[in-house]
Every structure is written in C-alpha cells, then in structure tokens.
Length: 137
Image (cartoon, rainbow, N blue to C red):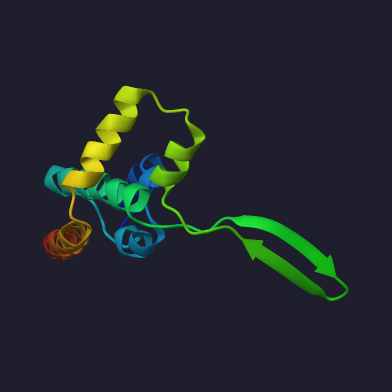
C-alpha cells in the first residue's frame, strides 16, 4: 500500500493513464504496487504491451447477442467465443497492411510463453515494489 498522498496520486495517475490496456486479472496486483522508480514504470509499460498482445490476439471473448425477459427470468444468448483480433478481421475495416502486421504478430507469438513472461514480469514488478517500499519506510 502507498504510504503518502503523493504516492497514492502518482499510482492512480499512472494506472489511470494506462487503464485502457489493463486486463482484469492483472489489475488487482498492479493496483497495490507503489511505483516510485523509473525502472518500475518501464517494467510496467513492457507488461502493458505484453498484456495487450495476449488479450487482443489470444483471449477469446463471448458477447451477448440477445437478451429476453420472460416473467421473472432473463434468458441470454451469447455468440461464439472469438478473440478481438478475429472480430476485427471479420469486420473488414482493417487495411491490408494493418491486418498483415497483426497476423504476423499472431503467428510469431507463442501464447504460453507470453503468459509466462507476463507472470514473471508481475512477480519482478511486485518484488521491486516491495523492495522500494521497505527502503522508503
């Protein structure tokens, strides 16, 4: 936890500015880190990039396609689970260059290794944060 108002404001500003790229399974871990050192911020930016790749290229999502209310019950129908990249390709709104770039990134990335790198980065960031928090206190 942060020890001062200034640190709390800094942490909230950094997380809020990058919140559009944060995935829920990492948000709780990163929200408790006190980011003081520039190296920690750089490590967090690397994590955001890795999490963006993982969540947009490899993490399938189901969208609600229909919702009907019958009496007291709500019946929901979901579409087929697809990644945001697959959904974007299906719209046809990507230029050929953009689609080729994302497809190349998809083919070159191993999702298991990427997820391991994300967890290792989180552990490293957490240990740096704990070390710097004990130095400050």
